[in-house]
Length: 359
Image 1 (cartoon, one colour):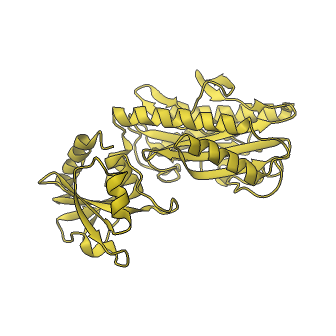
Image 2 (cartoon, rainbow, N blue to C red):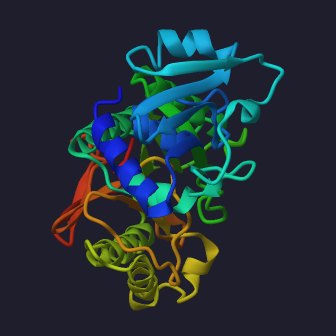
Image 3 (spheres, one colour):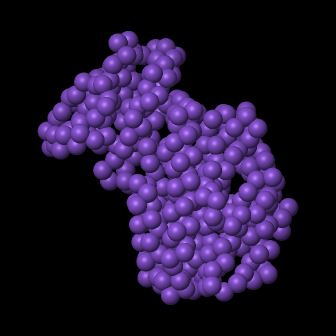
């Protein structure tokens, strides 16, 4: 935990000089995971964390602010090796009153009269360190292995809920928190892009979707299983969809404007036989890493893609979807969600997930 703390503090200090502040308060789960490499949630559904960290940029010190419920656990587990001061409040009191205020303070989640710096802090954490990139590779490989294992345990009669349970169990066995868990059987694959599981049986096809988190880093995975042989139309549609994804990946180069990447990817729908407006029916992905998506990228997105950032594109159409987590290297994005077992096809020089045929 906190293996890159010196570098993170250097980035925050530079931001403090830019903003004219001497203290930065981090309150969001993504920011705290970036700073300390730890779990900062109790409910996984909240952006706000169960503790805050006050960073004194002058003294280069940390103060953890939390309540009396969380403090003992955090000291024993998540923050056991973090050198910090502690401010502990009763569980019935809000933490805001224990946080510094005034014009010399900035925060990723504004409160009182402090300077809002959420956008700037998101940009700081967007570029991974070498250590974080190595951690992300293991997260992605393990998420891929969990999905492959789950796909081998389901059948046409398995309900969507049961399939989600199998996938969740495989993730948790690998110390991965399932922060997003979606399953669609054959009847719903073409109808819904975010298929929360239902009690209905899968039928002849199943789409397994998860976002899995460890060390605060997230792998996004979508995989499709076919039980009675892939029909020619399904094969053709999936092949065309992989070409759409290729357009996104080919355009994702360091220094590219994110909106231009989206424009290149969305233009590929029509070029490969889809409705030109297919991309209107579902967001196409964007920056990832510490969140499933920082925000849904669109043609007007002005952020620039830095080397060392993480993207997850998820084009969909004609009943299919493809998704992966990629680390942007000097020569472009490198897909990471691969366990060496799931069948792949080569598209644009990259191994991409194929449809898994099951008996």
